[in-house]
Image 1 (cartoon, rainbow, N blue to C red):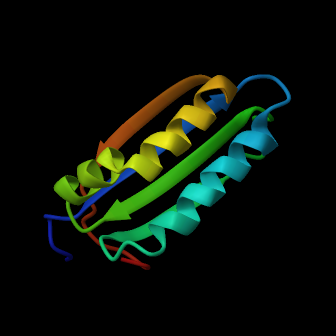
Image 2 (cartoon, rainbow, N blue to C red):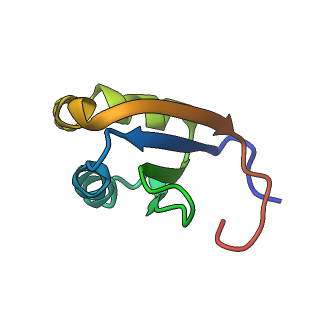
Length: 103
């Protein structure tokens, strides 16, 4: 079992019609930025096969506090501002990883 102090989240973004790829490009920039943050252990962008306007992001962080701190960064806030006009809706689920392959 892994440390229960880790934090993960699944976010489902519904893009404005025809804007999924543009939104994914911004989220991929966020993933590249997260790659330099040691506290971010995983940040993966997914396209569901059956939902043409949806993007799913899975994240694993060393702690919920590290995730919150990343959202307070000026760079992150600027990226969110760029993405907002492309987003029609967001649903997220906060999780505590217990274990498995890749964690």
